[in-house]
Length: 111
Image (cartoon, rainbow, N blue to C red; front, side, top):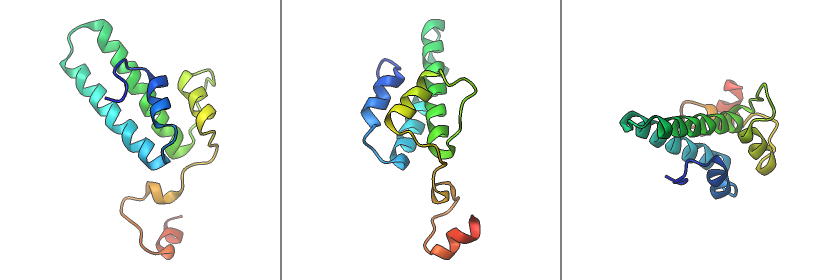
């Protein structure tokens, strides 16, 4: 895992210079690992920490993919997202397509 302490701040600092597609991929991998750890853990305190971390990573993925705005703008992950990326528009539709696109016409058909 990128963040051994389940710290979203630590994760964001590690990936802040990467491309959005790579950030989404790494956040997805990290959230999956965190969810798998939850399934194996028996200690309640650690489980809540991993669940919270996974939830924050999934929020980060949503911000990058869809520019989803939270109800409460005081969320830590939203503030980190705006600090490092500040994207207010959704990601290009190419990132959301189910199959690779080779022609510009294919992109225009799906938009």
